[in-house]
Amino acid sequence: MAGQIFINDDLLWQDRSLVEPLSRSWNMPRNWSLPASSLKQGENVFWIRVVAVPTQNSGLGKVFLGDDDVVMPIFQKLWYEQRVLHFFNLIFSFTLGIIAFLVWLFRRQETVFGWFALTSLFWVVFMSSTVMIVSPLGLTALQIARINSVLLFGFSVFSCFYAWRLALQKFVYLERFLIFCLAAFSVAGFLTSDEHLRTYILICFASSIVVLLSLYLSYPWLAYRAKKHESYLLAVVFIFYAFITVHDALYLIKLNDAYPLSAYTAPITTLLIAIILAMRLAQNIRKIEHFNQTLAENVLQATKALELSLNTQHRLELDNIRLQERMHLAHDLHDGLGGSLVRSMAIIDQSPSNLSNQQFLSMLKVLRDDLRQIIDTGSSSNNSVPETPMIWGAAIRYRFMQIFDELDIASTWRFPEQWMVQPTALDCLTLLRVIEESLTNIIKHSQASHVKVELYYVNHSQLILEIIDDGIGFDVDAVAKSGISVGLRSMQIRLVKTNATLHIESSSKGTIVKVTQSLLAHPAPPHRR
Image: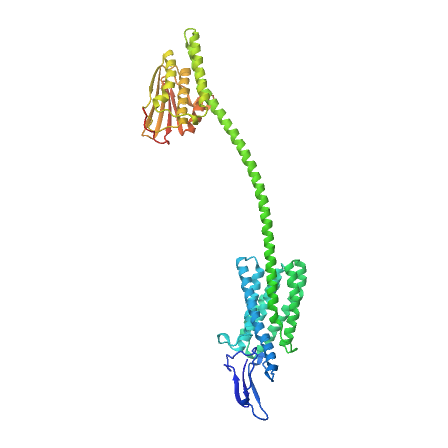
């Protein structure tokens, strides 16, 4: 660990600290050029004092004495083996550990890299003791020896874990046993006395070698079962590591003089991890390409299915539109042309004398006009809104007043002069159909003598249409339940579409048909004269 060198009883050099915490020169080759002035004729004596601890197999090591051109190549070789290689080993191991940790950090399912990062951490801390020249944190040589024993066994345990994960294996009970052993060695390392520390270190060292050799020699079988290229590659490397482990173990127990080869494993491990990462990257790229191809095919299938669905939906919408148009046409025929037919039939039925040809022709013209109106209007969305309520109701008022005059029915018509709120074309047509249906029913069934039609606003928020007669009335509930009144159902269907409600009151004294519409349209524009 530390020492002094004397030449002829004169101090030539010494370590900085010869007491605990000792300077750590145990892996540090040194070279001195002896000054000629310190040498004397005849015999020159070199004294080398070694300061260390018994558990570390302390000794002098190799000493070479000679000229510069003989000794310097030996010194440079020892410096490369004992310093440079160890520094490279630490740098490679630390870098690989950081890379593996980052891979695991961003992809937690990659447990191989997580265990490898932990393995690298233990190895880096363990190997740091071979290159440090100052004791860290003021630890003594024996304290560092205890820590290194635990680190070496932890390195062997976690090496098993990452290797097994790479071979898609997980030995639950064996892994728990190894973790238990690691915990036991950690506790024993701090509880073992200095007298028994040598035995503890030998047990830890032997256990670590046994675990590593068991892993290296059994892994080819695990790789064969896993049938993965990464496992095959690691199995080959482990066979090489097995020879290195045996070689270095024999060196540490003084059974051979060759220099340890463990420092050469870092470049091999670096190459191995680089190849594994490249294979994983290539595998992920292939998965992404396959996923993109599958996604493109699925998108194409979904597009075709969506196109088919949209075409089907479009056909259904067209069919629905056609059906709605037919329903609208049926309602218009019933309300418009049907009303005119009923009025004509009532006139003919109630006429005291036969009608003339001119009267029949007039009726047919009315029917023709109603049919033209239905054909021309078609959809209410294409109609224009009359400028005033008076204009809106003029045509229907004119037609029915002629009939009422012929049937001796008095009528009263009241419309506001201006639209307070601009209605839509659908609103106007719907209200006209309600008036036509109601007045037709009055002519046909009520036997009334007076009819009142009134359109008015309530607080600019509601538009009210009332049709009142003094006829014999009818049972509203019975007619609604019977379902035989096509006109009543037609009015209700139309009013629902315009946000309006229909209320009917009827008795023997007369009938009131009231339509209430909530006003949602914009205010009417100024009247243009």
